[in-house]
Amino acid sequence: MSYAKREEVRQQRLQKKRQQRLATLIAVAGVILVVVALVGLPSLIDKYRPAGEYVSITPQAYPFEDGRTLGDPNAIVVVEVFSDFQCSACKNFAITTEAQLIETEYFQNGQVFYIARQFPFMDNTSAIKASDQAANASMCAAEQDRFWDYHAMLFANQNTSNATAYSDRRLVAFAEALGLDMKAFNNCFDDNAYAADIQADIDRGALLNVSGTPTVFVNGEKLGVGNQVPSYDDILTAIETALSLQ
Image (tube, rainbow, N blue to C red; front, side, top):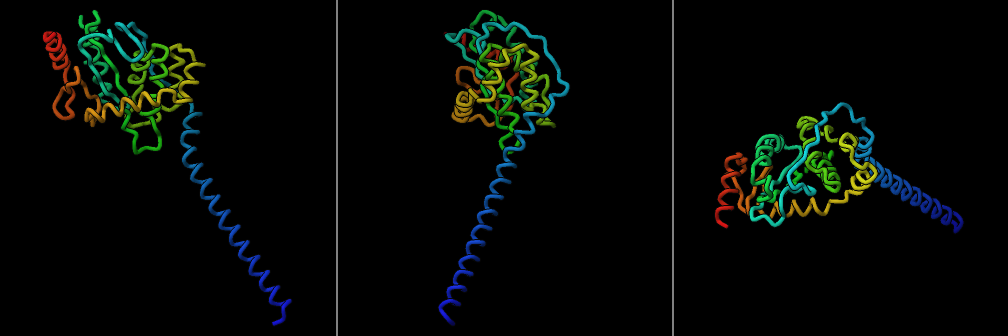
């Protein structure tokens, strides 16, 4: 074979390799684009999905409301409740036990410091992060001292069989319905401004061996056996016992 022919064959082989390499790069880039689209598409769809119909609530006054806490931070009794807004037992606890506790003299006179802890875990295996986004939105409402009304709004619209009940558009609509400063809320919500605070609650829950919601602690002592939700009487007794020891 002449030198010219060998050179021609060599160039043909180089050209073929270049084409194969280019095809591989295009295929890899295509896979990356598909993955990015699949990851980003749910949140993009969620952002622009219509809010639809939802239940409104009547705002109310809460004793010593400050962000997501009630009462005097220097109170000798501290009650912590870890919740997930997608948790049906948390909704039941909020509209019954919690509502009753808030009406007691211990709350009305500031003897108890009550903290709503975030523990979003029910969407850990879901592509739609409804629990996380509801927690995110509630913290942005807390920034405007409207956590408790927003908390009530979330539970009023809970739908455990449909995670889109807490779509981004609906979470924003809830804030609008409550008359929040929407520029501040949207900036906070879009930036996930309180992610570190939510993670701090999750970390504290892990430290306290929280494995379900709602989980209630009085002065660091867990109430209820296992994941059993303590009753109003259980919590009231624990508060009165803690007060009597001072």
